[in-house]
Length: 578
Image 1 (cartoon, one colour):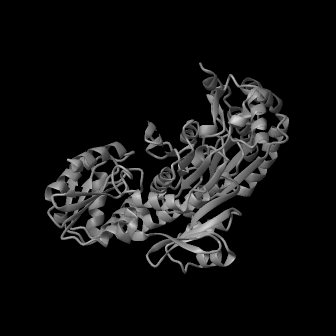
Image 2: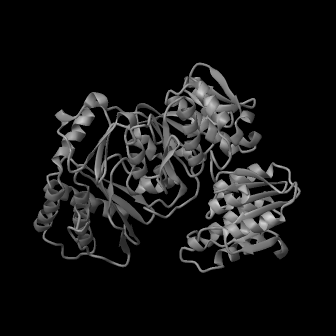
Image 3: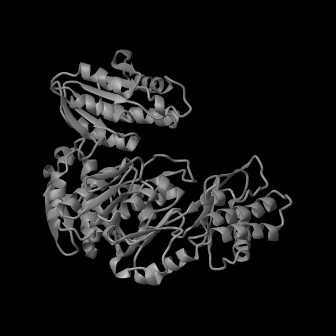
């Protein structure tokens, strides 16, 4: 058994239970997140027929007793209420995060006992047990390094295996069990680099890629994390969903890196937190209904709270670039004191007008140009029509992504000419922006491949493509099984705004997630029929690649096809490349 497994399984803390109370496994918080910017542990408690204030009062009493008994008088506790439950958290030293889980569970043990009138365990013995884990987990060398890094004004990144100080070209890595004394660290060689966080419901991958393209155009070695891979320059370090803190550490530890563009998704923020507190810029592209119902994030405003965790990563003077056209972003912005640069499609947007009047940087579209206001004067940076990603201006969601990327780039002190070059040179193809409205010509028809999968993103793509002329329109639809029936009906109705002549409903065998084969295509077909389509317009396919092949056999010159591809994307792209 390795050290981490030994720590994870060191204690089993039983708690009083009841049908109306459910408790998720406690988890470590390693960086800034939804609740706060401290490391520690959090547990999610769900209940019915209980007053949340009663649970919170018990937590504040028992968690404080546990922290004090463990010698963690300097550590804090917090909570967050949501419909049907609470998040309960404690902070802890960075070398005691597994122990923090047991400390949180111990505190909940006494909360549950009092709540359910059960007999609690022996407090002193339970504290001794947790202290035993603390002794095994303790790493005084790490605590010394963290203090020294803070004193030298340089970032430190920690995980179970390695510790690194600085970023990219200014970084050095050590095994967690072989850390140097602070006096033996070559501090002058270590430094932070320019880092930006990109989050939002939609557009975050494209914005991340755009920012990286701008950074490359400036002559810097740039890298990115995303839901698809981690890349430095042209070198892909690994493929997979790296939108969490692990991907961020992998990127920021690469010694070639000069600028880091980090896509961060809701899951990583909520599970572990963000990987650094040393970002110069961050953006929230938008917030819409997607992946609700986890970790106590049940509503779109609560999702906005989670996305806005990126503001906790900003250094002094760091910039938070925000979409002034998004109502949920606007509302949540009221709760942050960050240095905000607003961007909008409308120069008359009230927040843009206020920013200009206050002499604050902002960005917008005016007279067909992407414009940046630097606090004193405005400059037309590039014509919208010269940004290929905007499809001549019809893809308004990509104009917003371009505005966000420009704000981030300028906040990172990249030159305006690099912004122009990056935006002008970035193509909506499978090389620069794979899976995002990639355009192909096939048998004289226009064929677009997009990864859009929620109502917000599908609506944006369909609105853009609806502006293009076509003799006939084809659409391929599929959905993951973990969405509700209503979600699938809503997404289907949204997609039908594209006004397709032919709908092909594809099975997603690898994404059934508890549903049976045929169930999702049935829902798509039923939704289309309810929207006024007839059965002759609806076709079925056993897979996305089969659906794509069916459409490609039917298209003729002047037709337009939209393939919403959730899986088998490489196979579909290969068909089109041929």
